Length: 150
Length: 137
Image (cartoon, rainbow over all chains, first blue to last red; front, side, top):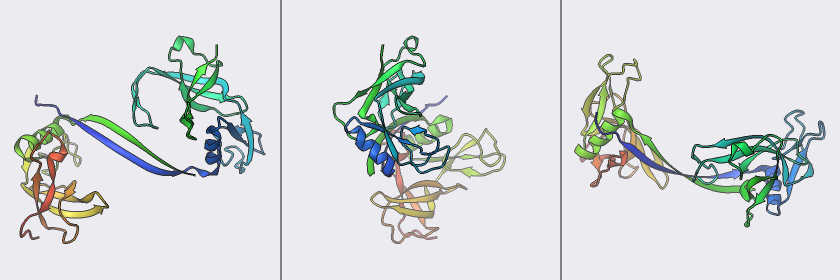
């Protein structure tokens, strides 16, 4: 059979994104290592990340409540396939852990990286805390990852 | 808050059997290849592995060009002009770069293919198409 050609391509994507008032306050808080959720006045559900409208009651949310930077692992996985990190465009080498973490004071989960990539050392219900970067930019990756508290 | 963000997405894809022939031909012979469907007798540009019209899988390779016909075009500010070009002998058009000014382009005008001096087996080996001298519809 003939030569097989593999095509190298590099896409550079840039965009401007209007974060909305709720995400703006959330992101500004991260810069001071402050995490806040939006609480629904109807059902009491505390949304983190914050969202402007309650998914259950469809009420507009405006009550901010403090949330800790540690919580409970509600679900986890270990990623073995090297994959593009959507925030940087760089390949993130596997294996690495990911988890849905419900921070103390919130009722919803945050999807984030875990420092632990050994599946035998991961379990639903473990507690994990945020590891912050030295330089805070006001973005979700101001938290580098979560580490399991043992 | 308006966030300004950008990411770099490097990747590789396998051009496949027909795509590899197409790219190697640009590189080695400055020849645009297409595929001819023996069932419905359409010529597709560029070469492709199966017929999108009737599903036939064993297509014949056909030589297209050397030039083509401009069907439509647009200008991407700061990035040049792009057009749908139907290579000579093809029944379909390819999206590619139109070399030269936006002004004066006409649907149906004749274009000639411009190849890079150094070719690596990439679609950019065919730099684009430019209006040929005295090209008419």
